[in-house]
Amino acid sequence: MKKSKAFWVFSVLALVIYAVVQGLISVGILDLYYQNILVQMCINIMLAVSLHIIIGITGQFSIGHAGFMAVGAYFSAIATMKLGLPLPVGLLIGAGVAALAGLLVGIPTLRLKGDYLAIATLGFAEIIRIIFLNVDYVGGAAGMVITNMTTWTYAFVSVVITILVIANFTNSRHGRAAISIREDEIASDAMGINTTYYKVVAFAIGSLFAGLAGGIFAHNFFIIQPTTFGFLKSFDILIYVVLGGLGSLSGAAIAAIFLTIVSSYLAEYPETRMIIYSLVLIIVMLYRPSGLMGTKEITSLFKFGKKGGSQK
Amino acid sequence: MTGNLLINVENVGIQFGGLKAVQNVNMFLNQGELVGLIGPNGAGKTTTFNMLTGVYQPTFGTITFDGKNLKGLKPYQVTKLGMSRTFQNIRLFKDLSVLDNVKVANHNIAKHSIISSIFRLPSHFSGEAKMEQESIEFLKIFGLDVYKDELAKNLPYGMQRRLEIARALAAKPQLLLLDEPAAGMNPQETHDLMELIAFIRKEFNLTILLIEHDMHLVMGICERIYVLDHGQLIADGTPEEIRNNPKVIEAYLGEEVVD
Image (cartoon, rainbow over all chains, first blue to last red; front, side, top):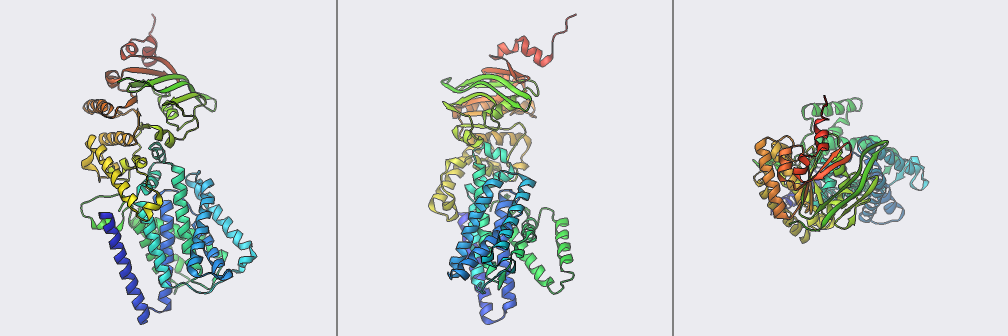
């Protein structure tokens, strides 16, 4: 079957990438600086792909993604730092609580459409941030001190799981139901799709992986502060998805990789960084208004003469 | 072919603020019937459709479908009961392939859960294979199987209309509601469509309610016709009766001038 072939290609590719990078790390070619960029890249891919399932697949315009990342970051940090649990358990707890938060936020807000939904999700993300700002248990505004535990292995395994789960969801009857909501909600409802259910499910899955990304992020630095998870972070994630092409998983991932590289190289020129970053975005949007990949997936580039939508 | 009462609409009306868009509509369809719903623009035909399918909740009256009261049901629940529809202004999933459009409507024939899809359990593969097979069957009936990988938006207009009917059929309805299926079609296409409707009706043992402006089509295939004007039913009967009904002629052409 062609779908399981794509799966094996992906798995082999993932193993090769992992082996090469791990090899370079153990030989010592990739020093801590580059390792950090790689982990950062993994976090951004996870965030982009998890927002992709909400905006690109289900078509629900959420701009509060950093809020769920914050939930994952704080709860995984509480698990590892305060309760002394191992990192994988902490990551699971963070992701789980973020998914719950996604359900709680999603059930009331997903009745809204378009701009209203965007504003409501933005509001909820700010509420989450301000709650962490005011809870002394997690350090309040000063932030929470965390031991650096994330390694390239943790980050990479998380990315692979994220992509696999979201790609598998998309290429199933559930994913098609979600895409049909994006395409035409009224028609989708009329065809027997429980639109509210699928919107909430997509939102919860997106939140879960944002939480996982948050957990990896929290243990990659020595401190997390509520200000990190402000609405600018949400917009950063939104930019990955839009730049990659709404509806394309590989597009979102490629945009995340590309922008991580751009911004880490620009870190050497702090005064012009944001100007150049913005210019890159403007140029891409001028020449590729539908995003780097449009709604196509990278796999469809290898199928000559065969037209496909956002399906692999 | 005509059998038991399938849908019964009693005194149904809807009010938008102060405007009574549709009022006191009484109609019924027996199993296997092909019934037309006609009326001038703005008469409330599509509004009636929207009430039947759960898009709007009627302000007054009750709708009973297959023995069940539809009050408070959402459109997807009504569809699961066995009623599906097409739209006046085509509402395909434009960026999905033709095959996937039909697969979306086939959603409920497979039962595999989200978990089994995520972990690619055997039930996922068997469910997806079943959907694929059934969807292709539907496309074949409509002669659309050659376009199965084409995006729906790239199909020519007439094909899009056919795809909408195919999609509605894939939802496994007992009652099919067609909202102006021949809108914008030329006479040849309309003729083909009439034959197609007659064919699927027999093949799937369907009951059909049809909104249409093309009088030739309506008079040609419908067994009974309801006429709406200004939100009220003004006539019902066989095509012959409707043709000679003075109220219908008045609604369409205006009053006769007395000189």
